[in-house]
Length: 68
Image (cartoon, rainbow, N blue to C red):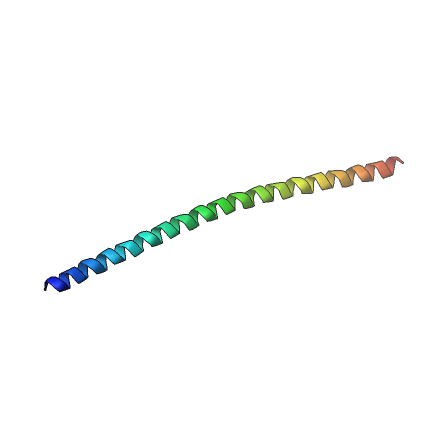
């Protein structure tokens, strides 16, 4: 019976180690996703700014051509 109890304890300890490993992996992935979402937001903002800049240049060119 003692051998059976040791096996149960070993299985539980192994399962807890695996659970801890999975929790760590989960946390690392969540952190990575959050960082990437932050970067995506930055790039989207830069795209919008650049689109506005390009539109302003087009409008400026059109005004310059009209005045010439």
